[in-house]
Amino acid sequence: MTPFSRALMRRVPPGFLPAMAAALLLGVLLAASLPPAAAFPGAAPGGSTQTQGAPPAPEAGKKIEGPTSFDTSSIVLFRHLIFVRLDKGFYEVMELLDFENKGKATVVSKDGSPTMRLALARSSNVRNPDARMEAAPHGLDPSLLKAMGSEISTTEPIPPGRKMVVYLYKLADEYGGITVEKPLLYGTENFVLLYEKDRVQASATGFTPQDPVTFQERQYERFLGPAKAGSTVRFHIQAPASGGELWMFYAAGGAFLLVGGGVALWVRGRRNQSLSLRVEREALLRQIAALDDRLAQGNISPGEHGRERRPRFARLRELSGG
Image (tube, rainbow, N blue to C red; front, side, top):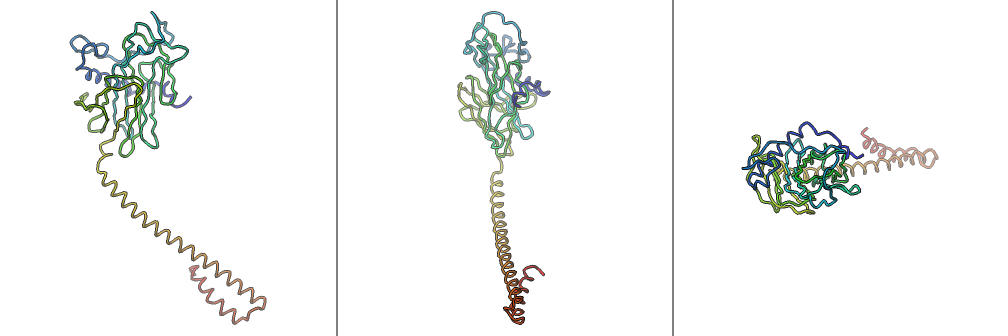
């Protein structure tokens, strides 16, 4: 079992449910301008809402009542919200998907085929591009989940009506921010990217900036637009400090290159000098040894031996630091 697969079986972390509740309420705020029929489940006439969590996952092995179908095309995505927050070198990404089975039959798995699929995002971070998921999605039965690559699938029966799924993962930050690629398995006219104001900066091509949303004394900037099934949404996110004062970064980099280049030339010169001195020292040792051998064999007089040996030996002592 891979670490990603094990993460799907873990319990929800302590901070996940409050974050999910915040996402649900923010979703309600975003839906305020939509017709009553487009509101979240629990919306009352007149636009007021009842505060409630996402529907719980069905009990494993529960008997399915009513007609069933293998046709997953009846499951449509009404709204897709992506929340981005900055947390200690990571971007915490929470996705809320508001599905609806528009058919009259419960969609069931055929021979183990998935009834619903989810996809994790990837980033441009060179060292750590993959999303890190630490808990199973809320709203789905963990025992029926499967992970393959960056995709999660379930064979859970999907009854008629609305179904909300929330899942959380992290993407590693790097200097200058990251570009996120999010595969879209379901299309929707209500794709919303929300990110913390003053803590996260974002840009997304093809989406329209909207007024900020305030929740619990925090403001979230947002982009709104349609999303086509099978496409990939790309957006760039960064901490405010990551994109500022780039000239200082380049100036520091230029200074580093100049200093580093000077040091490299100095080290190279010293290395070449050391190599030439070592070659000279070895040559002197060979010459002195040859003179000593000639003296021992009687091929040179002691006076001539001394005259030739003394300057070589003096140079050898100089090179050896003696």
